[in-house]
Length: 568
Image (cartoon, rainbow, N blue to C red; front, top):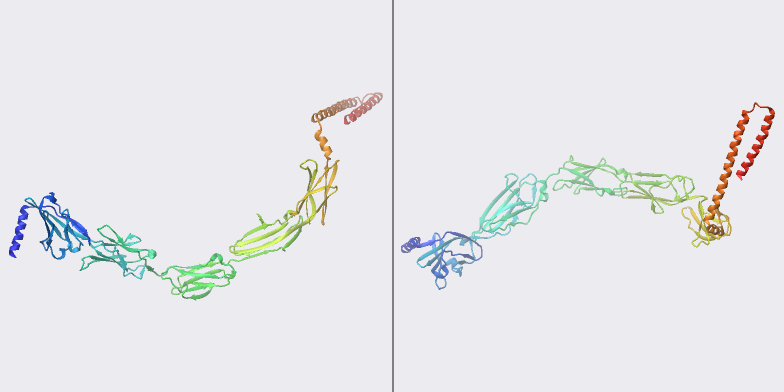
């Protein structure tokens, strides 16, 4: 024993004097995998070495693993745990299979080259990614304002030990010693020396945490962060506010059912309430709803609900039961005389302002039916629709406007070929008036009786100028109208006249008329001058007066004769 220890000391001393040692290197291997431990020296030893030896340190002593001489196979000299796990690669690296945490130690290769001994020391560390983290010991519920153990996150079988980080909605939670407290423990497994990490989170919840997601992340030197599945927790807190709701409030109408719902913001929500129904209190349990059936407008008003355990916490709501009453004071069939009044009145009683619309013959009107000075065109079928939310009311009547017929238009026109004349008589009246003519003609068309209007067309071939009468009658009276119709022959003569000759004749007539008018004016002026002079000579003798009178008479007769010629 002493001799062996002396030999070891001498070898160390010899190596200290002769060996060239390279620096200490640390490499990392994966647990359960084969690790290659390199032998690095300054010289190219693969061809020049004499001897290579791999050793490891155990309890500060060197233990041989394997030896290889030039041109010989490597020989394993180790026993125990390394006997079947070590080998040498072609580049002289030490291959260590099925790496374990117990392999974390120092290894050394010694190379004899020529007269030198070179060695390389390597420190080996084994790493293992932990299993995916998970949360256990989860709380059933978290209470607002009270710090509660939320759960414990485990990250097992890792090396080195993982670091656990707690997350809320993917944001890091840090221990503050008040609302958040995190405790972490690390335990190594005796058999494998792998680390199990446990992190416990104590948390004081807030109301906004109702839907929050909590998880934990395991951080490891291998660079892969593992995150646990998210967890949500029920947050318990007492009721602070109560609200009274009405189910399908827009559909609350007379004859329907009304359901009241009391909503409290506590968690878990309360299940027993008082409902105050217009002065009448009802207690309900194991539900937060109460239904009133077959409601009427008298059920409108204020309703309340409150907690049984704390009646001071209550909610209220004003409820309006919608109703709609419509009364139209007209019969289904209405008959009025033209120019008269409809005398329509509409009474609407409703919970709110409704929408009112009218149609006539299916066509929407911009306003209601005309009430005064009725015309035949006002006749027709009228329909009223009144709407208030889901409530709809309708009423209708048919209006007939009666009266003696009136001819609105009587005119003529040529047909397409120009061989006939078309006479058109348009009249109004009700009942439908009958149309006739004082001459024989061919009926072309009679438009359907619409809104008290009838249109009658006949064609004639007049050989002379005519006065044609359109006769329209019904039970209320008769109307006639005359139109002068020229013969087709006269129309043709007028069309064939020479326009230039007519112009010359017209000019001649105008010239004669103008000449006669000028002559009459001259004679009149002369007579006026004469009369003026006669009055100025009133002081002369009677004979002269008599002579003047005779001359005056002659001039008057002459002026009258010229005036008559001018009129001609």
